[in-house]
Amino acid sequence: MYLIHTCFGQRRMSVSEYSDKRRLKWERVLYIQYSLLQLKRTLSRMSPPMGDSHKRFLQTMMSNGIISASQAAALHKHCCETHGAHYVADRLDDFINIINAHLQSLFMHIRKGMSEEDGLEYYALVNVTETDITRMASDYADNELELFRKTMDLIVDSESGSASSTDILNCADSLQTKKLKKKETEHVLSKFVQDKWLNEKDGEYTLSVRCIVEMEQYMRTIYQDLIKVCHVCHNIALQCQMCENPICGIKVHLPCVARYFRARSDPRCPECSEFWPHEIPEIPQSQSQSSQNLPSSSKENTAPTPSRRSRRS
Image (cartoon, rainbow, N blue to C red):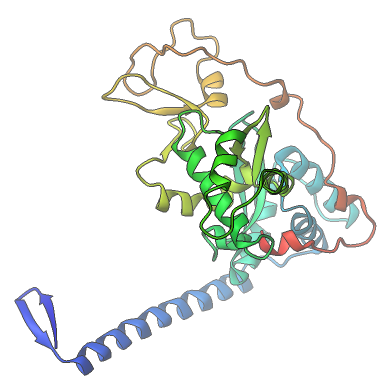
C-alpha cells in the first residue's frame, strides 16, 4: 500500500492502483510530446519552403558548428547570390527563421549568442533535445567528460569566470572514472579548445560561446544558485563586473560595461544608481573590425560534407 496526499487529506492506495496512475501519467506525457511533434511538423509544412540558398547555408552551419555574425552575413549573401535567390542584407534573421522552422521536427535550432570576451555575436547549430554534457559523449571518453564537468565547475564557481591550467591539472588527478596524467590532461584541454568548447589565453580557460549557447539550460539547472545573467543583455554572465552594493549585486559583461558606460563621466549602476567603482574597459577593436571571411566550406563548389562534430552540434 502507498500513502498519498490529496486535497482531502491522506489516503491509502493499492500497488495496482498506484501503478495504473503512474501509467496514465506517462501516457499523458507521451501524448503531449507526440502532439507537440505533430504541431511542429505542421508548422514546418506551413512555413515557406527551403530553397537551395537555405540548404547551402544549413550545410555550412553543420560543417562548422558555429560562425561569427559577420561570417553569417557574408554567408547569407554568398548563398543567395550563388543560387540566384532574392537577397536583402538586413533580413538575415528572417532567412535563418525559415531554416529553423524546418529544423523543428529534427529538434535542431540555429541560435544566436554573444562572446563574453569581445561582445561579438555568433550563430551556432544546436541540438535542443540534449541539454547536458552527454551531447559530447560520442567524441570523448568518460574521464574526459568528467574533466570537462570539473572544469566547468571551476569556471562557474570562480569570480573571474575562468579556471587556471594548474587548478584543472589538480582536478585531473582526482577523477572518479580514470585519472589523467599531466600530458594527457593538456592534450584533452587542447581538444576542448580545438572543438570550440573552451577558450584559452595565458593559461586561463573560459567557456566558449558555443559551450554557453549549447549548455545554457544545463548550466541554469545545475548551477542555479551560482548563475546570474547580465543586466544589460540578459545572457549568462561569467566574465563580468559586479555592483558592490550588497543589496543590488547585479552583473554586467565586460563588453556590455564598455558599451553602457561609454562617454559617461560619472558611471553609476544601471539598477541601484550607486557609483560603479570598476575600471571601464575599452570597446574591443574587433567589434568594429570583425572578419568578413566566409566559413571555409561555403567556398567549395560542391555541398560540404557534415563533420562528425556537426552531428553533435
